[in-house]
Image 1 (cartoon, helix red, strand yellow):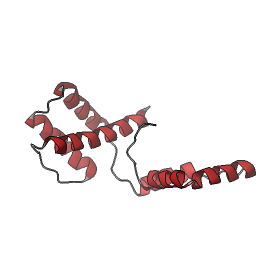
Image 2 (cartoon, helix red, strand yellow):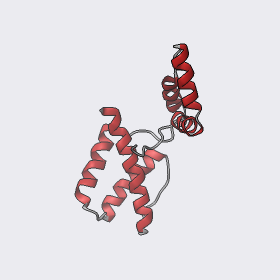
Image 3 (cartoon, rainbow, N blue to C red):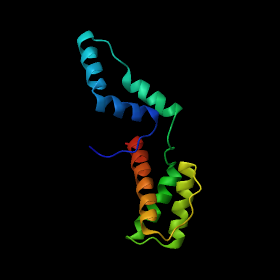
Length: 123
């Protein structure tokens, strides 16, 4: 299974109910009774009410793709500044550019997950 960034509270609750076996029990009862538990609708509603981060806009997707297509494994100071600005907008953060390699990689990994989730919506 692809590691996806939780979009919001609904995704987190779904992960907990799967891990504890609650989802399997609800699915079994739903199948036996023929009554839809509406878990998917509830998850989406909770994700919209309590999001962890927003998705990229189409312009932000283009910015991310443009920067990542030219990096080839090396992030310039200018590209890092662009990505940090994007990160701060998406996560409502105040991150600063860094010379710490693992800090930059962590930022890039989080942006990649948001990018992946944003592109899934378009599919």
